[in-house]
Image 1 (cartoon, rainbow, N blue to C red):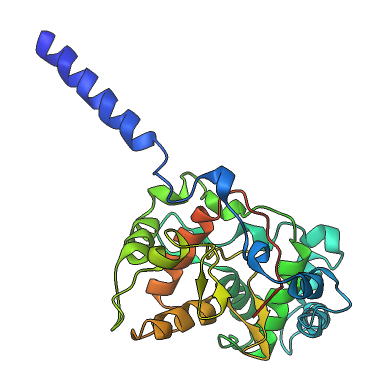
Image 2 (image 1 turned 60 degrees about the vertical axis):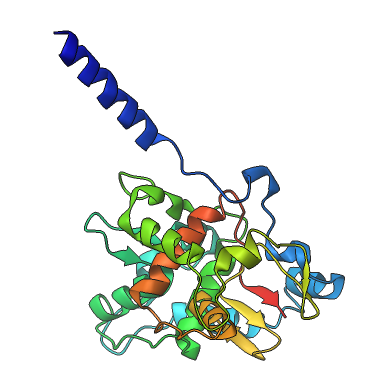
Length: 263
């Protein structure tokens, strides 16, 4: 009997440890979006819808949202077209399904497009996919990413999160650097004329001045890989989806501010 009591105590201790939230590299109270590290001019450009260059994309996205497909209904016919109906829609991504698959906003849009509209999927970084993503993201501004929960478990309890975390702390490329070295250990410091941010994804899809156009989070992540002279994973690859899951968790309670403006 005594042995069984000890076994039960040990099991309860293990379960308690597993239920604890994983340790964060930056305390929740210290989290800052990239906007906090931008110049006043860029902050104004982002906050004023009349000046934000991303408006060209979200206005196109609004039109596409209400436009029927050749052999299927318009997005608005199922989901509505009023901004209030769309609030929080983008905030629910990325998600991890019960099978372990990762579904981000772009994948959900294409799933609806192929299954409901009977139309070909849009390619990553295509104008149409960026436009719809920007429209939905704008409609979810100010919302926290509800994707920090799956149907029955926290993102941090998924295999995708674990893989994304491992990638985040792994040194890669010819420069032998990890994401954490810039965005956890040295945020706020200057590098190459810019202030390093904490690297949160809440502004994407975003208009970047260096791109002179809109881009998805995956485009930005691929640029980071190239920056440390590592082979960038393909758009929509498992590696980038896993990083997206980890970054969504890492952003904690930060509200969405997409479509953002960045340098």
